[in-house]
Length: 187
Image (cartoon, rainbow, N blue to C red):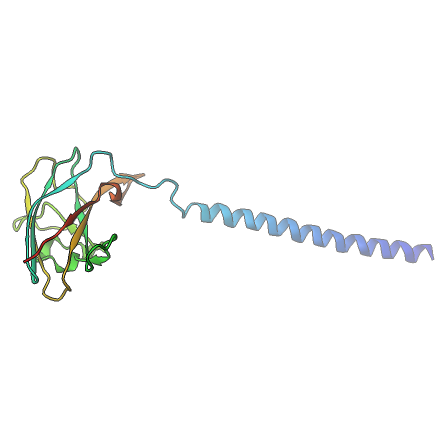
């Protein structure tokens, strides 16, 4: 009888050891997965340096086109900008992306998978690259848009963008804090 009791106790111990090993294995595996996935999440949000700025000097628009003169009046070179428009009077947030309507086909950043416009592109130098070519105090640039397929717009928002290097990789940085908004009175 004593021998049977010992066998039962040993059987219970081996089941407990199995459960403990299973729990330890699950915890170790969870730690490994966490360590690997942690490397995929960016640690710090990249920000534009304070003093990055664009200004719209003048504009001309009607129902079919928009033309404006833009200048870099900040302290740092800029790579380009995102442009959005409002289609309702008094709308707070601009939601219509106008980048694809830019008439300078060389400056549209869609081939780089960016819905923005590259500044500093000339007919002689129209290579899309990750360079901040719109220099501080450089000559103003005229931007033209075909709005014939867009509803009437009431305002535009322009958000500067820059390319910055971090840990050997070039990152596109949106300067949302330096966004400019211009209400339009189109003819």
